Amino acid sequence: MKKLLLLIGIVGLLAGTNAKAQTNAAAPIAAAVKAPTTEDRLADLEAYINNGARQTNAPTAIATSAGPGHNAWMMTSSALVLFMTLPGLALFYGGLVRKKNILSVLAQCFGITGVVTILWWAFGYSLVFGKSFNSPFIGGSEFFFLKGVDSAVNTDYAAWVSHNVFSMYQMMFAIITPALIIGAIAERMKFKAIIIFVVLWMFVVYFPLAHMIWGITGYMNGVWNAGAAIKAIDFAGGTVVHMSSGWSALLLCLILGPRLGFGKTPMPPHSLVLCMVGTGMLWVGWYGFNAGSAVAADGVAANAFTTTTLATAVASFTWAALEYVTRGKASVLGFCSGAVA
Image (cartoon, rainbow, N blue to C red):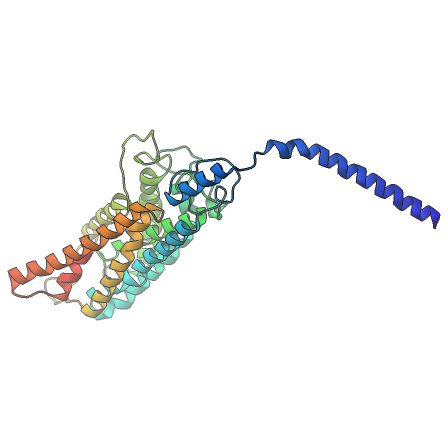
């Protein structure tokens, strides 16, 4: 029994000595880490409220995490932009086609949403917002399969928004862009052909163009790339989304030609009710599309929010008013066309 007690005492003594040695060794390291001061914390708080660059390197709770208010707005904006495609764009286009083709349009919107989401997760986000290739035309491979895209902040693009939230927001733009094209070729392409076209188009057109405009090393990124050859500023996708889809849609129309029976068989919209509902959803979704492009809940977002409301309202009313002046009556389709235009 005495031997056992002696053995326990020796082990305890050795353990205590080792722990003391480790504590003494760690003391200089701990002392080297500067504790955040009140000024450090206030500087970070001001930066967060103003959506500015982080002011200190002190390990404060604010300085090492995303901002909850900005994150909440960006998650809401992401949902609003997806709402523009499903069901907004699907109903808008679905109401404009003939009754026999509405299900094909709905399926195309769903199919595009699914396939682009997979492409974005696997390669797209990295090819657009990566930088390992150090190329002005394409991003990198560091974020393939969203590797390392977590709730921490990627300060290349946002000071206070989680990396994964930013990637999801940008994914919604990638989804709606090819979906816009199908309105130009409705009733003229099979589902399989559209999906194959979209996959190829994303790699050939969207990913390179999005990186050139929005990527940190982009050829035309006049916001984040000081060495950009062309100082372009694309706040909410005027080039990346609208010009790319518009020109692509025009070329695809010219290649496919008119619908069978065009000019001989009447092809009126089968449901302006669906068209109007879809237009309303697009209008609501634009608040996420435009105000969300500030990548923060700040004054820039507030200005975009106001502009979106006024621009859409004026365009919608003006189109209908011109119809009334030139044709004697306004139409629901006129209101919808103006709002979308």
